[in-house]
Image (cartoon, rainbow, N blue to C red; front, top):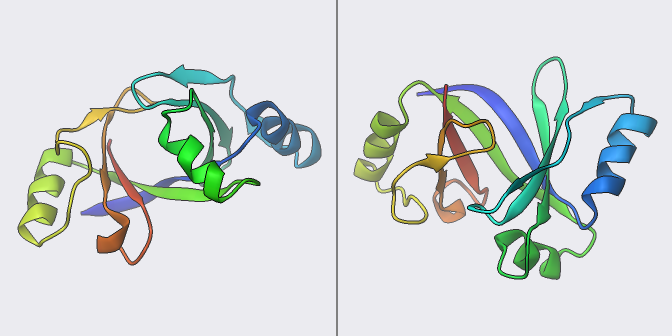
Length: 134
């Protein structure tokens, strides 16, 4: 079911500073910021040859990233994202196996315009896990 690692997401308190670190200090290709109001975040992608790093900054006080940063003020790893071929088949398989899909269980459009969903961290050994259909 899982294909490749799509990205590692890092919550950051200052997305411009984090993007500058990856671009100017570490020499990586960095995308422009993109606001995703439906997810409550602004994202920047650090593009590497073998995967991406997604930088997440809260978009408002109700953002789940704001709550994460309240507990981790310097930021940190927020979730892992894996590619899947068929997100509905993956969801149905996981739910049948006892996994909890966050929200109402329906995939939403992610930062790449593709369907995504999140699995409860308690069902994936403490790691918030995103699946993205490719």
